[in-house]
Length: 413
Image 1 (cartoon, rainbow, N blue to C red):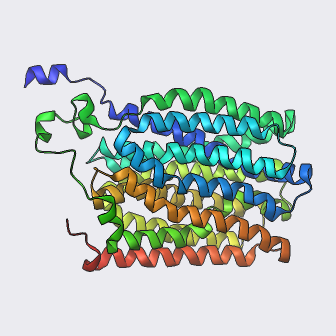
Image 2: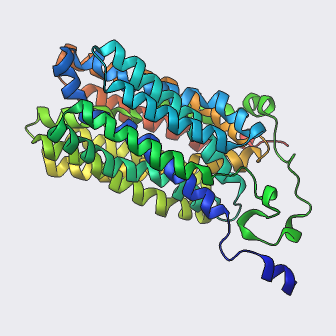
Image 3: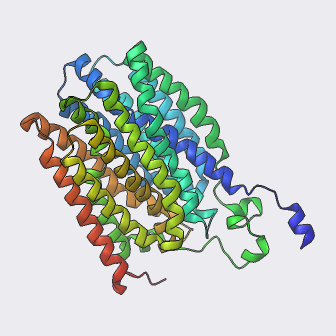
Protein backbone atom coordinates (compact mmCIF):
# COMPACT_ATOMS: atom_id res chain seq x y z
CA UNK A 1 0.00 0.00 0.00
CA UNK A 2 2.85 2.42 0.82
CA UNK A 3 4.56 1.67 -2.52
CA UNK A 4 1.28 2.19 -4.42
CA UNK A 5 0.72 5.51 -2.63
CA UNK A 6 4.27 6.65 -3.35
CA UNK A 7 3.89 5.91 -7.06
CA UNK A 8 0.62 7.78 -7.35
CA UNK A 9 1.12 11.31 -8.81
CA UNK A 10 0.59 14.22 -6.47
CA UNK A 11 -1.84 15.91 -8.86
CA UNK A 12 -4.61 13.72 -10.22
CA UNK A 13 -4.49 13.92 -14.03
CA UNK A 14 -8.27 14.37 -14.14
CA UNK A 15 -7.72 18.00 -13.18
CA UNK A 16 -5.55 18.48 -16.28
CA UNK A 17 -8.41 17.03 -18.33
CA UNK A 18 -10.68 19.60 -16.66
CA UNK A 19 -8.17 22.33 -17.64
CA UNK A 20 -8.20 21.18 -21.27
CA UNK A 21 -12.00 21.11 -21.34
CA UNK A 22 -12.03 24.57 -19.71
CA UNK A 23 -9.87 25.89 -22.55
CA UNK A 24 -12.21 24.36 -25.14
CA UNK A 25 -15.29 25.94 -23.58
CA UNK A 26 -13.56 29.28 -22.96
CA UNK A 27 -12.33 29.63 -26.52
CA UNK A 28 -15.28 28.05 -28.30
CA UNK A 29 -18.15 29.74 -26.50
CA UNK A 30 -16.17 32.90 -25.77
CA UNK A 31 -15.71 33.44 -29.50
CA UNK A 32 -19.34 32.51 -30.19
CA UNK A 33 -20.74 34.89 -27.57
CA UNK A 34 -18.79 37.84 -28.96
CA UNK A 35 -21.37 37.89 -31.74
CA UNK A 36 -23.59 40.41 -29.93
CA UNK A 37 -20.72 42.91 -30.16
CA UNK A 38 -20.46 42.28 -33.92
CA UNK A 39 -24.22 42.46 -34.62
CA UNK A 40 -24.53 46.21 -35.19
CA UNK A 41 -21.23 46.56 -37.15
CA UNK A 42 -22.29 43.71 -39.45
CA UNK A 43 -25.73 45.29 -39.90
CA UNK A 44 -24.15 48.59 -40.93
CA UNK A 45 -21.51 46.98 -43.15
CA UNK A 46 -23.95 44.88 -45.17
CA UNK A 47 -27.20 46.86 -44.79
CA UNK A 48 -28.94 43.85 -43.22
CA UNK A 49 -31.93 43.55 -40.88
CA UNK A 50 -31.56 42.50 -37.27
CA UNK A 51 -33.32 39.20 -37.97
CA UNK A 52 -31.12 38.19 -40.89
CA UNK A 53 -27.96 39.18 -39.02
CA UNK A 54 -29.07 37.22 -35.93
CA UNK A 55 -29.27 34.15 -38.14
CA UNK A 56 -25.45 34.07 -38.21
CA UNK A 57 -25.35 33.23 -34.49
CA UNK A 58 -28.32 30.88 -34.73
CA UNK A 59 -26.67 28.92 -37.54
CA UNK A 60 -23.47 28.54 -35.54
CA UNK A 61 -25.42 27.60 -32.41
CA UNK A 62 -27.43 24.99 -34.27
CA UNK A 63 -24.26 23.40 -35.64
CA UNK A 64 -22.28 23.32 -32.42
CA UNK A 65 -25.05 21.57 -30.56
CA UNK A 66 -26.29 19.38 -33.44
CA UNK A 67 -22.83 18.11 -34.35
CA UNK A 68 -22.48 16.50 -30.93
CA UNK A 69 -24.58 13.62 -32.24
CA UNK A 70 -21.60 12.81 -34.49
CA UNK A 71 -18.63 13.99 -32.44
CA UNK A 72 -19.89 12.33 -29.23
CA UNK A 73 -19.90 8.73 -30.56
CA UNK A 74 -16.61 9.37 -32.37
CA UNK A 75 -15.05 10.47 -29.06
CA UNK A 76 -16.40 7.37 -27.29
CA UNK A 77 -14.70 5.24 -29.92
CA UNK A 78 -11.50 7.10 -30.85
CA UNK A 79 -10.90 9.48 -27.94
CA UNK A 80 -11.79 13.10 -27.25
CA UNK A 81 -8.41 14.75 -27.89
CA UNK A 82 -8.31 14.57 -31.73
CA UNK A 83 -11.80 16.00 -31.98
CA UNK A 84 -11.08 18.80 -29.49
CA UNK A 85 -7.92 19.85 -31.35
CA UNK A 86 -9.67 19.72 -34.74
CA UNK A 87 -12.50 21.82 -33.34
CA UNK A 88 -10.18 24.58 -32.18
CA UNK A 89 -8.49 24.67 -35.59
CA UNK A 90 -11.88 24.95 -37.31
CA UNK A 91 -12.85 27.89 -35.08
CA UNK A 92 -9.61 29.69 -35.91
CA UNK A 93 -10.09 29.10 -39.63
CA UNK A 94 -13.72 30.24 -39.55
CA UNK A 95 -12.95 33.47 -37.72
CA UNK A 96 -10.04 34.25 -40.03
CA UNK A 97 -12.24 33.62 -43.08
CA UNK A 98 -15.02 35.83 -41.64
CA UNK A 99 -12.57 38.74 -41.50
CA UNK A 100 -12.43 38.67 -45.32
CA UNK A 101 -16.20 38.43 -45.92
CA UNK A 102 -17.71 40.76 -48.54
CA UNK A 103 -21.34 39.89 -47.83
CA UNK A 104 -23.56 38.45 -45.13
CA UNK A 105 -23.74 35.11 -46.94
CA UNK A 106 -19.96 34.82 -46.62
CA UNK A 107 -20.25 35.54 -42.88
CA UNK A 108 -22.85 32.74 -42.65
CA UNK A 109 -20.42 30.36 -44.33
CA UNK A 110 -17.23 31.46 -42.53
CA UNK A 111 -18.40 32.27 -38.99
CA UNK A 112 -21.47 30.07 -38.98
CA UNK A 113 -19.76 26.97 -40.34
CA UNK A 114 -16.30 27.57 -38.84
CA UNK A 115 -17.38 28.37 -35.29
CA UNK A 116 -20.40 26.07 -35.47
CA UNK A 117 -18.51 23.02 -36.71
CA UNK A 118 -15.52 23.80 -34.49
CA UNK A 119 -17.44 24.03 -31.23
CA UNK A 120 -19.55 21.08 -32.33
CA UNK A 121 -16.47 18.93 -32.86
CA UNK A 122 -14.84 19.87 -29.54
CA UNK A 123 -17.48 20.62 -26.91
CA UNK A 124 -19.31 17.32 -26.34
CA UNK A 125 -16.12 15.18 -26.49
CA UNK A 126 -14.32 17.46 -24.02
CA UNK A 127 -17.21 17.59 -21.53
CA UNK A 128 -17.91 13.88 -21.95
CA UNK A 129 -14.28 13.03 -21.14
CA UNK A 130 -14.46 14.93 -17.85
CA UNK A 131 -17.42 12.82 -16.68
CA UNK A 132 -15.34 9.61 -16.78
CA UNK A 133 -12.56 10.99 -14.59
CA UNK A 134 -14.81 11.71 -11.58
CA UNK A 135 -17.62 10.10 -9.59
CA UNK A 136 -17.94 11.73 -6.16
CA UNK A 137 -16.96 15.17 -7.45
CA UNK A 138 -18.46 14.85 -10.91
CA UNK A 139 -20.73 17.89 -10.57
CA UNK A 140 -17.89 20.06 -9.27
CA UNK A 141 -15.45 18.93 -11.97
CA UNK A 142 -18.04 19.41 -14.70
CA UNK A 143 -18.79 22.87 -13.32
CA UNK A 144 -15.11 23.82 -13.48
CA UNK A 145 -14.81 22.52 -17.06
CA UNK A 146 -17.78 24.45 -18.37
CA UNK A 147 -16.96 27.55 -16.32
CA UNK A 148 -14.86 28.41 -19.36
CA UNK A 149 -18.16 29.32 -21.03
CA UNK A 150 -18.93 31.83 -18.29
CA UNK A 151 -15.43 33.29 -18.19
CA UNK A 152 -15.35 33.47 -21.97
CA UNK A 153 -18.67 35.31 -21.90
CA UNK A 154 -17.23 37.67 -19.27
CA UNK A 155 -13.97 38.49 -21.03
CA UNK A 156 -14.40 37.96 -24.76
CA UNK A 157 -17.31 40.29 -25.70
CA UNK A 158 -15.70 43.35 -24.04
CA UNK A 159 -12.40 42.40 -25.69
CA UNK A 160 -14.14 42.11 -29.06
CA UNK A 161 -15.87 45.47 -28.51
CA UNK A 162 -12.54 47.14 -27.74
CA UNK A 163 -10.93 45.55 -30.78
CA UNK A 164 -13.81 46.61 -33.03
CA UNK A 165 -13.60 50.17 -31.74
CA UNK A 166 -9.83 50.35 -32.19
CA UNK A 167 -9.23 48.36 -35.36
CA UNK A 168 -12.59 47.47 -36.93
CA UNK A 169 -14.58 44.25 -36.95
CA UNK A 170 -12.38 42.52 -39.54
CA UNK A 171 -9.19 42.86 -37.49
CA UNK A 172 -11.11 41.84 -34.37
CA UNK A 173 -11.96 38.52 -36.00
CA UNK A 174 -8.26 37.96 -36.84
CA UNK A 175 -7.25 38.45 -33.18
CA UNK A 176 -9.96 36.03 -32.02
CA UNK A 177 -8.72 33.50 -34.57
CA UNK A 178 -5.21 33.73 -33.10
CA UNK A 179 -6.57 33.14 -29.57
CA UNK A 180 -8.46 30.08 -30.78
CA UNK A 181 -5.40 28.67 -32.51
CA UNK A 182 -2.85 29.23 -29.75
CA UNK A 183 -4.81 28.85 -26.53
CA UNK A 184 -7.55 26.50 -27.67
CA UNK A 185 -5.42 24.30 -29.89
CA UNK A 186 -2.60 24.07 -27.35
CA UNK A 187 -4.50 23.32 -24.15
CA UNK A 188 -6.94 20.89 -25.78
CA UNK A 189 -3.96 18.51 -26.05
CA UNK A 190 -4.37 17.89 -22.30
CA UNK A 191 -7.67 16.05 -22.79
CA UNK A 192 -7.68 12.26 -22.35
CA UNK A 193 -10.67 9.98 -22.59
CA UNK A 194 -10.47 7.60 -19.63
CA UNK A 195 -8.45 7.34 -16.38
CA UNK A 196 -7.89 3.63 -17.02
CA UNK A 197 -5.71 4.57 -20.00
CA UNK A 198 -3.24 5.90 -17.42
CA UNK A 199 -3.72 3.02 -15.00
CA UNK A 200 -5.69 5.36 -12.75
CA UNK A 201 -9.16 5.37 -11.26
CA UNK A 202 -11.86 8.07 -11.04
CA UNK A 203 -11.37 10.81 -8.43
CA UNK A 204 -7.69 9.84 -8.04
CA UNK A 205 -8.51 6.77 -5.95
CA UNK A 206 -6.22 3.77 -5.88
CA UNK A 207 -6.87 1.53 -8.92
CA UNK A 208 -7.43 -1.43 -6.57
CA UNK A 209 -10.63 0.23 -5.39
CA UNK A 210 -11.99 0.12 -8.94
CA UNK A 211 -10.87 -3.32 -10.13
CA UNK A 212 -14.47 -4.41 -10.48
CA UNK A 213 -15.23 -1.49 -12.75
CA UNK A 214 -15.48 -2.16 -16.46
CA UNK A 215 -15.22 0.00 -19.54
CA UNK A 216 -18.47 -1.61 -20.68
CA UNK A 217 -20.49 -0.07 -17.83
CA UNK A 218 -23.39 1.97 -19.10
CA UNK A 219 -26.35 1.90 -21.43
CA UNK A 220 -26.17 1.62 -25.23
CA UNK A 221 -27.05 4.83 -27.05
CA UNK A 222 -30.08 3.25 -28.74
CA UNK A 223 -31.43 1.94 -25.42
CA UNK A 224 -30.83 5.28 -23.71
CA UNK A 225 -32.63 7.44 -26.28
CA UNK A 226 -35.66 5.12 -26.25
CA UNK A 227 -36.09 5.41 -22.48
CA UNK A 228 -38.82 7.66 -20.97
CA UNK A 229 -36.10 9.28 -18.86
CA UNK A 230 -34.11 10.43 -21.88
CA UNK A 231 -37.23 11.59 -23.71
CA UNK A 232 -38.19 13.73 -20.72
CA UNK A 233 -34.72 15.29 -20.57
CA UNK A 234 -34.83 15.88 -24.33
CA UNK A 235 -38.22 17.59 -24.16
CA UNK A 236 -37.07 19.80 -21.29
CA UNK A 237 -33.92 20.89 -23.11
CA UNK A 238 -35.78 21.52 -26.37
CA UNK A 239 -38.43 23.74 -24.79
CA UNK A 240 -35.95 25.61 -22.59
CA UNK A 241 -33.48 26.29 -25.39
CA UNK A 242 -35.97 28.31 -27.47
CA UNK A 243 -35.31 31.14 -25.04
CA UNK A 244 -32.07 30.34 -23.25
CA UNK A 245 -29.72 31.92 -25.83
CA UNK A 246 -31.86 34.94 -26.68
CA UNK A 247 -30.00 37.25 -24.23
CA UNK A 248 -26.64 36.41 -25.82
CA UNK A 249 -27.82 37.88 -29.12
CA UNK A 250 -30.39 40.49 -28.14
CA UNK A 251 -29.45 41.85 -24.72
CA UNK A 252 -27.01 44.40 -26.14
CA UNK A 253 -29.40 45.76 -28.81
CA UNK A 254 -32.25 45.71 -26.23
CA UNK A 255 -30.16 47.85 -23.90
CA UNK A 256 -29.20 50.20 -26.73
CA UNK A 257 -32.88 50.59 -27.64
CA UNK A 258 -33.50 51.74 -24.04
CA UNK A 259 -30.79 54.39 -24.15
CA UNK A 260 -27.90 52.47 -22.57
CA UNK A 261 -24.52 53.52 -23.97
CA UNK A 262 -22.80 51.05 -26.29
CA UNK A 263 -19.82 50.38 -24.02
CA UNK A 264 -22.14 49.79 -21.03
CA UNK A 265 -24.47 47.57 -23.06
CA UNK A 266 -21.61 45.24 -24.03
CA UNK A 267 -20.61 44.96 -20.37
CA UNK A 268 -24.03 43.44 -19.66
CA UNK A 269 -22.87 40.33 -21.52
CA UNK A 270 -19.91 40.32 -19.18
CA UNK A 271 -22.34 40.41 -16.25
CA UNK A 272 -23.93 37.22 -17.57
CA UNK A 273 -20.41 35.83 -17.63
CA UNK A 274 -19.80 36.87 -14.02
CA UNK A 275 -22.95 35.14 -12.87
CA UNK A 276 -22.36 32.15 -15.10
CA UNK A 277 -18.82 31.61 -13.84
CA UNK A 278 -20.01 31.83 -10.23
CA UNK A 279 -22.87 29.44 -10.98
CA UNK A 280 -20.61 26.84 -12.55
CA UNK A 281 -18.02 27.01 -9.77
CA UNK A 282 -20.52 26.92 -6.91
CA UNK A 283 -23.64 25.15 -8.09
CA UNK A 284 -21.90 22.10 -9.55
CA UNK A 285 -20.45 21.26 -6.13
CA UNK A 286 -23.75 22.01 -4.42
CA UNK A 287 -25.50 19.66 -6.86
CA UNK A 288 -23.17 16.83 -5.75
CA UNK A 289 -24.59 17.18 -2.24
CA UNK A 290 -28.16 18.23 -2.98
CA UNK A 291 -28.77 15.76 -5.82
CA UNK A 292 -27.93 16.64 -9.40
CA UNK A 293 -31.43 16.00 -10.73
CA UNK A 294 -33.02 18.23 -8.13
CA UNK A 295 -30.40 20.88 -8.83
CA UNK A 296 -31.32 20.78 -12.54
CA UNK A 297 -34.92 21.62 -11.60
CA UNK A 298 -33.72 24.58 -9.53
CA UNK A 299 -31.63 25.92 -12.43
CA UNK A 300 -34.58 25.95 -14.81
CA UNK A 301 -36.84 27.72 -12.32
CA UNK A 302 -34.09 30.25 -11.66
CA UNK A 303 -33.65 30.99 -15.37
CA UNK A 304 -37.40 31.49 -15.76
CA UNK A 305 -37.59 33.95 -12.85
CA UNK A 306 -34.53 35.84 -14.06
CA UNK A 307 -35.99 36.19 -17.57
CA UNK A 308 -39.14 37.64 -16.01
CA UNK A 309 -36.91 40.32 -14.45
CA UNK A 310 -35.59 41.16 -17.93
CA UNK A 311 -39.13 41.81 -19.15
CA UNK A 312 -39.50 44.78 -16.75
CA UNK A 313 -35.90 46.08 -16.92
CA UNK A 314 -35.30 49.30 -18.84
CA UNK A 315 -32.08 50.79 -17.41
CA UNK A 316 -28.49 49.67 -17.02
CA UNK A 317 -28.76 48.87 -13.29
CA UNK A 318 -31.83 46.62 -13.56
CA UNK A 319 -30.44 44.95 -16.68
CA UNK A 320 -27.21 44.22 -14.80
CA UNK A 321 -29.22 42.58 -12.00
CA UNK A 322 -31.00 40.44 -14.58
CA UNK A 323 -27.72 39.54 -16.30
CA UNK A 324 -25.99 38.35 -13.12
CA UNK A 325 -28.95 36.32 -11.82
CA UNK A 326 -29.62 34.81 -15.22
CA UNK A 327 -25.95 33.96 -15.60
CA UNK A 328 -25.85 32.10 -12.26
CA UNK A 329 -28.70 29.77 -13.18
CA UNK A 330 -27.73 29.41 -16.83
CA UNK A 331 -24.22 28.44 -15.72
CA UNK A 332 -25.64 25.93 -13.26
CA UNK A 333 -27.88 24.43 -15.97
CA UNK A 334 -24.93 23.89 -18.29
CA UNK A 335 -22.79 22.46 -15.47
CA UNK A 336 -25.37 20.03 -14.09
CA UNK A 337 -26.82 18.60 -17.31
CA UNK A 338 -23.85 16.35 -18.35
CA UNK A 339 -23.49 14.79 -14.87
CA UNK A 340 -27.24 14.04 -14.87
CA UNK A 341 -26.73 12.16 -18.15
CA UNK A 342 -23.74 10.29 -16.71
CA UNK A 343 -25.66 9.41 -13.54
CA UNK A 344 -28.59 8.18 -15.61
CA UNK A 345 -26.91 6.15 -18.34
CA UNK A 346 -23.33 5.38 -17.27
CA UNK A 347 -19.99 6.15 -18.88
CA UNK A 348 -19.59 3.74 -21.79
CA UNK A 349 -21.43 5.96 -24.29
CA UNK A 350 -21.77 9.17 -22.29
CA UNK A 351 -20.44 11.45 -25.06
CA UNK A 352 -22.74 9.90 -27.63
CA UNK A 353 -25.80 10.23 -25.38
CA UNK A 354 -24.93 13.85 -24.51
CA UNK A 355 -24.51 14.50 -28.22
CA UNK A 356 -27.98 13.21 -29.02
CA UNK A 357 -29.46 15.19 -26.11
CA UNK A 358 -27.85 18.40 -27.33
CA UNK A 359 -29.60 18.17 -30.71
CA UNK A 360 -32.61 19.46 -28.76
CA UNK A 361 -30.61 22.55 -27.81
CA UNK A 362 -29.50 22.89 -31.44
CA UNK A 363 -33.05 23.28 -32.72
CA UNK A 364 -33.94 25.75 -30.00
CA UNK A 365 -30.81 27.81 -30.67
CA UNK A 366 -31.47 27.87 -34.41
CA UNK A 367 -35.07 29.03 -34.03
CA UNK A 368 -35.13 31.15 -30.85
CA UNK A 369 -32.73 34.08 -31.41
CA UNK A 370 -33.60 34.35 -35.11
CA UNK A 371 -37.36 34.35 -34.45
CA UNK A 372 -36.89 37.05 -31.81
CA UNK A 373 -34.89 39.14 -34.29
CA UNK A 374 -37.61 38.95 -36.94
CA UNK A 375 -40.30 39.59 -34.31
CA UNK A 376 -38.45 42.75 -33.34
CA UNK A 377 -38.20 43.82 -36.99
CA UNK A 378 -41.99 43.50 -37.22
CA UNK A 379 -43.05 45.02 -33.88
CA UNK A 380 -39.99 47.00 -32.66
CA UNK A 381 -40.50 45.42 -29.24
CA UNK A 382 -38.88 42.54 -27.34
CA UNK A 383 -41.51 42.25 -24.58
CA UNK A 384 -43.59 39.34 -25.88
CA UNK A 385 -40.50 37.35 -26.91
CA UNK A 386 -38.94 37.75 -23.45
CA UNK A 387 -42.14 36.63 -21.69
CA UNK A 388 -42.37 33.59 -23.97
CA UNK A 389 -38.75 32.75 -23.12
CA UNK A 390 -39.59 32.81 -19.41
CA UNK A 391 -42.63 30.60 -20.02
CA UNK A 392 -40.46 28.11 -21.91
CA UNK A 393 -38.11 27.75 -18.94
CA UNK A 394 -41.06 27.23 -16.57
CA UNK A 395 -42.44 24.51 -18.88
CA UNK A 396 -39.03 22.82 -19.00
CA UNK A 397 -38.86 22.93 -15.20
CA UNK A 398 -42.27 21.27 -14.95
CA UNK A 399 -41.01 18.36 -17.07
CA UNK A 400 -37.92 17.91 -14.88
CA UNK A 401 -40.16 18.10 -11.81
CA UNK A 402 -42.13 15.12 -13.10
CA UNK A 403 -38.83 13.36 -13.84
CA UNK A 404 -37.72 13.84 -10.22
CA UNK A 405 -40.92 12.56 -8.64
CA UNK A 406 -42.31 9.90 -10.98
CA UNK A 407 -40.91 6.37 -10.62
CA UNK A 408 -41.93 5.59 -14.19
CA UNK A 409 -38.99 7.69 -15.38
CA UNK A 410 -36.42 5.70 -13.41
CA UNK A 411 -34.09 3.85 -15.76
CA UNK A 412 -34.03 0.06 -15.49
CA UNK A 413 -30.54 -1.18 -16.33
